[in-house]
Amino acid sequence: MIIAQEKRKQNIAEYLLYMWQVEDLIRANGFDIEKIKRDIVSQYDQPEEVKNEITRWYQELIDMMLLEGVKEKGHIQLNKNVIADLTDLHLRLLKAPKETAYGAMYYQTLPYIVELRSKSGGEEVPELETCFTALYGYLLLRMQHKPVSEETQQAIKQISSFLALLAEKYRQEKSGELKLEEEI
Image 1 (spheres, rainbow, N blue to C red):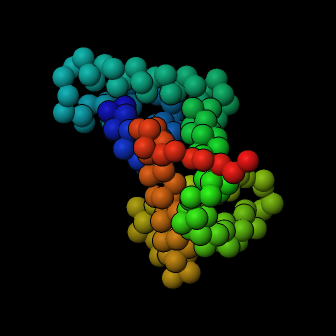
Image 2: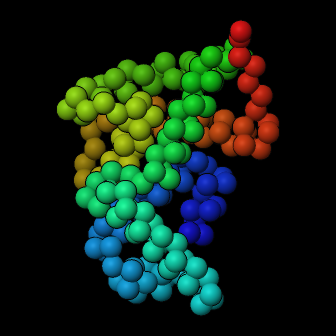
C-alpha cells in the first residue's frame, strides 16, 4: 500500500507493474489474508496501525479479485482503468502537433508491439497492455535468473523507454504541466 501510493504519484508505469506483482503475490498466498499478514505485512517496519491499514488494503484487493473473477489470471478493474487512462493519454499524445518526439518513440516501438501481439496466440490485447505484459514477463524471467535472448533484451529496452516517456507525460498531465493542443 505504501509502495503503491508512492509509485502511483511518481511513475504510473512502475505502479501498474507493482500492482500486477501484488495480484500475483495474493494468488501465490492462496488469497489467505492471515498468510499475507504473517509473510508480507509483518515484514514492514511500521507501527501497528499502519500494518493494520496495509492488511485492510490487501483484504480489499483480495475481495476485488474474487468479486471480479480474476482468481487464476487477469487484472482487477482498478488496474485495467490505469491501462485505459494511459491509452487515452497515448492517443491524445499521438494527435498532439507538439508531441512529435512521443510519436517517433511510439513508431520505433510499434514493430516490437506487433511482433509480441502476433506471438500472443491471436488474443486481442490493447497495445499498451502488450507492452506492460512484455515488461512484466521480462521482470519475472530476471527474478528467476532465466536467460533472456539479445533480441528480447532489445525489445524490452525499446518498450521500457517508450513506457517511461508515457509515464512522464502522465505525471506531467496530472501535475498540470502538460498542455495538449490537438489539431481541429
